[in-house]
Length: 435
Image (cartoon, rainbow, N blue to C red):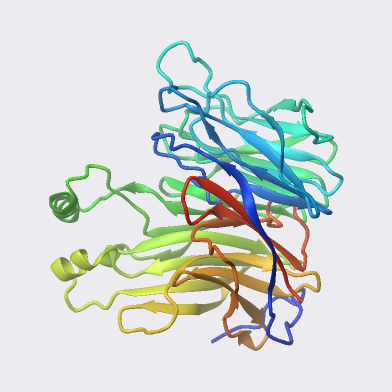
């Protein structure tokens, strides 16, 4: 059953025919070999739009700098009718992961950074997560460093699993960073006046990472995936026999938590959205959109069994399904659930690989997807999801970022995409117009 979507989301009356206006290169990068690539922070934004200007955060790997902390942030900007230019970069290669980005519609740009505190010894250990604020982003402009008053009891390291959200209209920020010993997500909120109003930790029942964070109408929202070592001994031993790889983290339980007033209240208990533990499945948390009435739209990939070999060994009667799923929550209660693209064994259509939400200028909500080597759009209407429409990109994206409202970008008929190109080690941008 498909419930009516939020009243704020206009019906998309006709199939959109997207027009690709730009495909170009933002920057190149070298592999850091530290466990975190240039799109590693997939839950947090790396691209934002302010008017006719687009900003992108792209990591750079230091030459002959030892991992783990061997990268630094770079901030790029592009006018709609211009080319990408470098606004600035960190002075030290002191970070392991890419640095999330957000912007307010008055022109300010923010970076979430996590520099290592001590670079004199091994390049890992305690870190000092901060925000950088660019009030007038231009080449050579110096940002202001903002110390974040995190709640007490945390231990932060180079593995930060940062979440970051900006309310572009209200001018507020919400920073999030993982506690190394416990896996708890610590957070802090900054209001439009630059005051840090509240801080705490999200009460996830178990270590949860790669958060999508949203800050809207005074409320805070977070979506995260459980990220733990394979807990079933028999499965872990079998997978090691097959791969000879000791790294074996699994992602099978999806959680959402929220607070209606981020400035004065803590996050409530986490709500479990889905669980594929029983069949050794896999879930990828993809995106979250908060509607005008506060409804939380959640997008994720759900695979019933992690691999064919696992199915054949432990679940011989289980069909492997791979679905792109859309769930709507109202006040923490599930209102609807629908499969947008049904893939997996026995299906001949699109095989979903990734997705993001995008709201157009008229309020219509779309899902931007990667499936079967293509990118496309699905309009979400009161009558249900529309038919997939292909975006005719010369170089389709696999994993990609959009200029999302979670990062402060406004609803727009312009779709900005940022990801890795076909050649690899090339960070590419595409601008697509939705009629």
